[in-house]
Length: 170
Image (cartoon, rainbow, N blue to C red; front, side, top):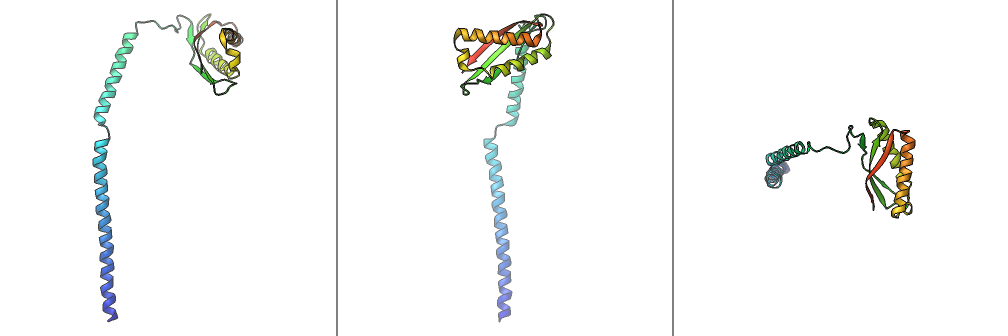
């Protein structure tokens, strides 16, 4: 009698495991299908996005062609090199920052290596300046003079003038 109870208990355990696996498989398929449907509704239409991006690129190319007729100030013909914008924190107070855009007027053909060296030198100098040193018109004049002096030392006479395009302190 004990043998018949054991024989009946094993098929019950197997059928319970099979039912659990089948239930998990059905739930997994439902979850995957639901995710696919919701993803299709939420995600943007990729073809439409690619077409819009291509249209923007074409429009930008046409805009550049239209602007090609206007001369740019920083060209080799003008011997002017515009440096990348310089953005740095001030020495004191350190929560204030300064942004400079500077252009260099070379005496002869522009030298990119010297321009990059000057850019790094100006950046290093601006990090040592405090807000009190550049306050007001006199402070700005002192800053211009200091940077001109550094440019003269670095360029050894190859740069005749430094032009400030923007100067922002925040």
